[in-house]
Image 1 (spheres, one colour):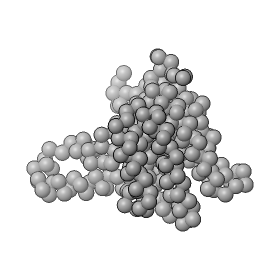
Image 2 (cartoon, rainbow, N blue to C red):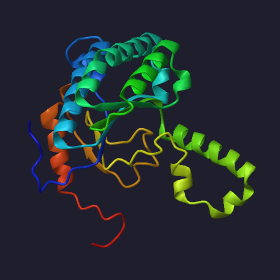
Image 3 (cartoon, helix red, strand yellow):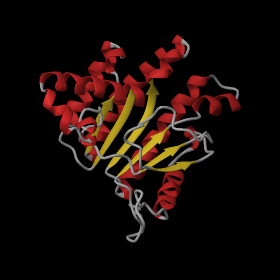
Image 4 (cartoon, one colour):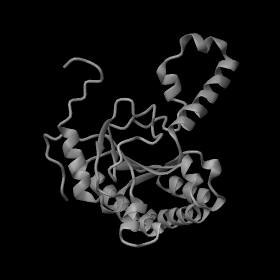
Length: 240
């Protein structure tokens, strides 16, 4: 099994904005959904690469709150695809000691999908080789707002909390509570924006933008991103 060189700085948490499925399909004269199907192989390849490289958390931006505005047929296909994907990959999670987590506004997901998510999360809850996080029906602003609502209710119950608030008080109410902030955020397809993703958690993340479309982003591309990360000097606003 290939591993990164010992002197390479390996990120604990790598997050990927998976972009370019539709463009990949369009360039080949195919329907957009074909790009989503091809993208599954990229998810599998990057998960394997993350394990091989010693990454402990891999998170994937699969479906945003804004994506609900896409054509209904495409949304339905994506939801059905996610159900099949989770069912098919569960044996792999067992075999490779991978914990599976889904985060986002799950109240908007259908019952079948939520049942499959709960099953996969319960079955893999004790695994610790890699935590694979899929963000479904998620947006950074929604996440901050729902955390602020929780905080407001807690302050209403204990007004003294307002006088001793710290950043961690909000962090602990985000859906990512207990998960380290991403060290590296990768975006495929050539776009250079974060698209309302991990706005709080990504405050000090390193970014890697690539023109490679998501269905073509495989192990070699993943390793290139980690190699670039290893050259970065993360100072968090301090002087080295």
